Structures are given as C-alpha cells and as structure tokens.
Image 1 (tube, one colour):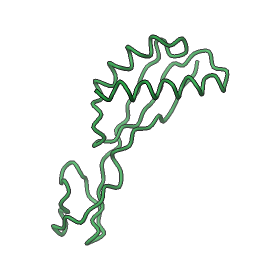
Image 2: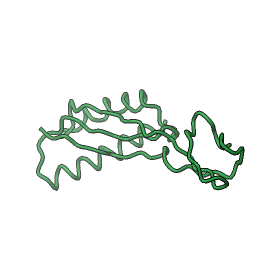
Image 3: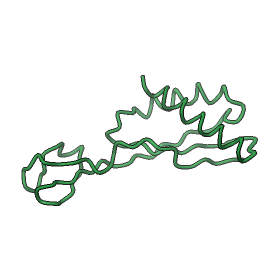
Image 4: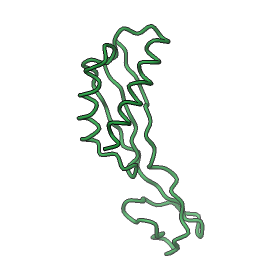
Length: 114
C-alpha cells in the first residue's frame, strides 16, 4: 500500500512548513491526485486519518482530495484526449504514438492553518 508512504511524505512536508511558519494547528490539507497515479483515494483517506492523528500539528486535520483528469496527446495528429476513456490509442487517428500529459501527479496543493 503506497498510500501510507505518500501520507507520511505529505505529513513530513506539512510539519516542516508548519515549523518554518510557526503554525500551531492545521485544519485541512488539500492534495491533487492524478486519475492514473495508482493512488486509491479511500485508502489515502484511511492512512491520513491514522497518521495525521499522531501529529500534534495535524491532529483532526481534514484531508481533501482533488482529482487531476488524465490527458494524453497524440504525436501523430497533435490532438489531446481523455486517457482513461481511450487508453494509449488516439481516438482521433488511431495512432499509438501517444504521451501522457497529465494525470499521474501527486501533490500537496493547499494547507489551511487555524
């Protein structure tokens, strides 16, 4: 379950930022998760609750998850398309010479302090 590792990394990052900015409490953390990142949001939320409640700074903090849609570009025709719906084959020209543009990211987007 790599979700736990992602949560530990995010919590370490937020705690470092909290120390740098003299925060006493964080009420929420928003993460952007790519549609094809392999992260299961419900697992991420479960890991978050368990780990965040062990941190003085993050105890009780809400995890908000935003999904980044996966988009692929076709090198043959130059058009973009939704990756999950169509896979690696371009629905416009049928080429498999394609590249994922976005949708595999995992980012801490926002931290709300109280």
